[in-house]
Length: 103
Image (cartoon, rainbow, N blue to C red; front, side):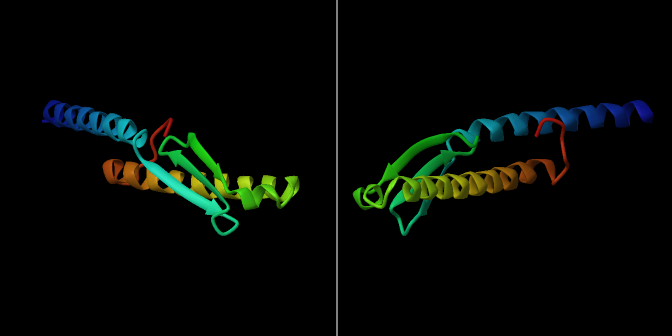
């Protein structure tokens, strides 16, 4: 009886591992966009929290260096936070909310 349960458990673990790998692959394709300064700065990141694009309106440039830096930081942080949240939600759909090493 124990051997059968262990076999079933290993099979489930392998299936979950495969699903996790599929989700991780999908995260590269997931694009999240955030903006700051009323759209003067926008940032796109993927599900792996990699910055893909930063767009800056001309008006933002004339606001001055410090203001522009703040707008960029704000937009990047918003995009990364949303990407991380969406990625975690996608991963939880596979793992059922279990905390796995390296995730």
